[in-house]
Image (cartoon, rainbow, N blue to C red; front, side, top):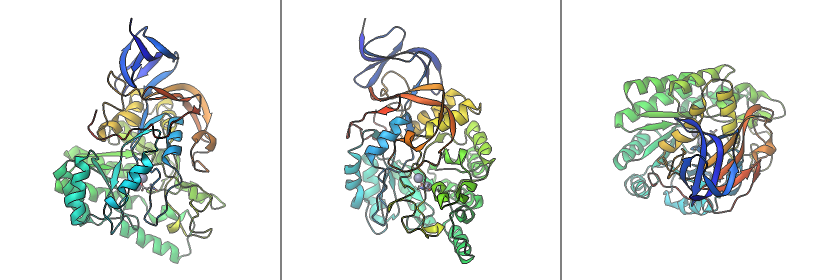
Length: 462
Ligand code: URP
Ligand code: ZN
Ligand code: ZN
């Protein structure tokens, strides 16, 4: 009888389409067989546990370079540790481009940082300055090399692009065969609201939500879809915060426009009221789009069930609360427009989706796998190498205790950030083992990684 390098034995195997009891045989980091009574030189007993594809977090900011020269605190090394702690085995962060510079100005540096990653990764390429040479030379070269996802911001100083620039990026993506991910908020509307709020002396973190109400996101989502429709280019919409925005996407999908979209845990469990917490703590919950109101999460779950939203990513952002790189980097009296946006969530993502989704009966187990692993892998050209359990796929697995009750705290996140916005949240269901390309990288919360062991994944390469 064949002996495998490793067998994960007796668990309930869950994919996006099936749930069955069995063993997984692994050779050379790949799944070699699914069956019963498989033999291995190493065996991990998973009886009574779920065995699911390792998570694919298709939107996370890791060691992100910002236009002011600063770099997020979360490095590829610490992010890998945090991801493994939470059951995620693939991440897709963002290579930067800044206005006035070619893509090449920072690409090599970002690649060098990523080369230290312990976790497999792909890149989205941010486009902030679609000059003739970016459009005509750099984008085609990237796509040719297997980086087939471009990211644009319709808001933020100094990242945003205008509609004409967006159209040029869409056209290049269409011509060369890339997808385009979009941050949808109306830049001028947010500026106009922010100026008014500041003039009224409302500079505190809670004003963040008031500066960018739902309609600001809804308008930009509608516009992004319309422009994509004009060019005939598929787009993927990031971090949808509420049902009103999801409805714009659903309407386009019904017309046959090729638009897909994600939401994130922060929109499922945080609210705008969190930004009113005392002692400047509101900054811990500031992300864009803003968390909405209690009750809005139910509309997102409905959109998830309807298939309008089919990816849940973390949008992990590496800003601590304290320190010179953190939320108050611009001083203790910084107004809300000068507090960096984004919340950390790499390790919490899967547990929150499982607990809020599966345990509370809003989605089933197969939906959970689809949302956290299979769909993101498919959307970004990594499937079937990533995002499923099948012979030939990378042996990226998470062993899940569906009954374990955990109160989230910052220690459990194992990231470089000094807080989690989910502190105190009770979840049911927790990863107790993570296997990355056949290596046990987390067991009962203990993570062991090798710097540089992560592979750079190119879209469409099995
Ligand atoms: O607030 C957020 N989401 N910050 C991260 C950057 C982005 O918009 O994705
Ligand atoms: Zn964004
Ligand atoms: Zn983001």
